[in-house]
Image (cartoon, rainbow, N blue to C red):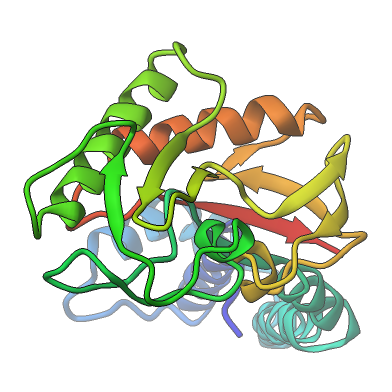
Length: 262
């Protein structure tokens, strides 16, 4: 372990004075004294006035005391950081869960050139709304689009919904899809996958981003994006989601970080 800075500084000063006293007592002077040695000697090295009556044993005792203090400080520091107290500190820090929550995902990673759903992500808004593989998308946000351009239409609808949410024009982010079988689904994209009371998690949606990140019932939210949560989790989550959506691009997904404790 290392010695704390203040302890180290005090010990260096103590050692320096003891060193100067020893030099003065034995009337020894380094051939090339450093500026620190010269200052210490100038301050303490006056054998005829200060150290003439002091024995070598006293000087040696002072040096031994300084070495003992160094050893004690190093040992104490090592016990604190590596002993039971250090273990408690480490366990407290490691017990926190840092979860990266993804929002804004439809759950339709596979849409082919004919605008037909090829794959659905379990636990996603699309899955929750009953969308099935093989369904063909015919409209997005109530508007038709050129053949083969459903992905672009969905992206444009998401961007518009994100912007309205960030601006406070919408209280939630939704995208509506229409299918050739006559089905219409409205998917909410700003869901985190948790319910809460205060800053305590009361339920977790199965297969949601929250569950995938290890969030469990009973955990308490400590901070979101590094900002401490003072109890109003709803406002903190809304702020985090707005930040995530405002930064969303193809390269930067809409995500934010939540730290929780048991």
